[in-house]
Image (cartoon, rainbow, N blue to C red; front, side, top):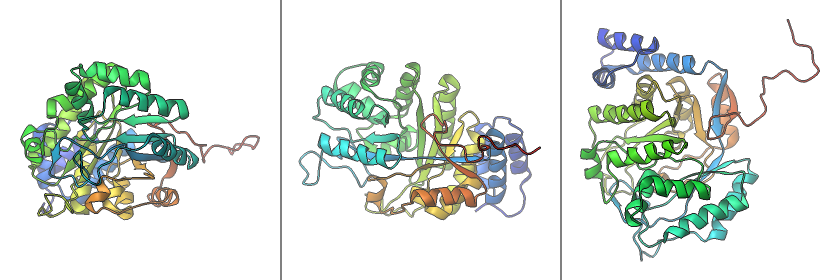
Length: 375
């Protein structure tokens, strides 16, 4: 537990971050080990306001669609996946999937987050047809889909370079790439957590190839299981280095491991204090990733809103549907009004945005047409 007595090293590091100077690995570790929550939060809030001085904080409306829960990998932290032949294994019928998108559009959504497991039997054309069918029916909807583990798996399965898989997916309608399956980008950790799943360099290479094609993506981190504090910072360092090279990451999203109903349910869950600390440090350390998302899905509405004081400038998604984390016992759901209220209670104006972090709603602060502007 960090001391309540101000640490001069921590104070110096925080001043550097607030002034816009890049933190080194050891400084990131020092903040994790010794930084007190309020000091970290104040510094992260100042950095966030420097990067986002506008009076708005954002959200988007999308739906998590898991087209299948069948997965050839074994992830000890996952309560969602099933094997081929399990009684509750599924691949969504196309009509069911398209109906989910229709409902999303009716609720004002402009995007779906579509991911599945590493399915050992679906042919390559199944994925291409899926993308084409979605774009034919809903050309206005961005498909934020297929995590790096899925792309890497398909590359190996069909003996096709990663960039060729991505090129074909893009031509068929893929719009942006999520950062799923990141967990901790350290191979020691990944080999403990999973079997048959992409390791660090290849996870990063999927993003790199997508950025080479002109695409954008997000990065994620799931922590609070078997990693060390140093490995959390190593994860951020790898993301920051990728962004230095490509500039293709739009946002960073982190959340605490949810152990219930998993093979790792003996690990005590991390609480709000740890979550806010890590989020604040991510804002301080990731100086080149423009947006930090709150994770109210795992933390609940109160902490999700409080995260806007700890470096987050975005409340993430309304998330009309969520299947993976909820299998581990997380049950937080917010309405659109509740998301907007959380932003207002933090002192900001809520705005809806798209995957590019462009506003797609009317500016509530704009002067009405025809009315005189006060001077």
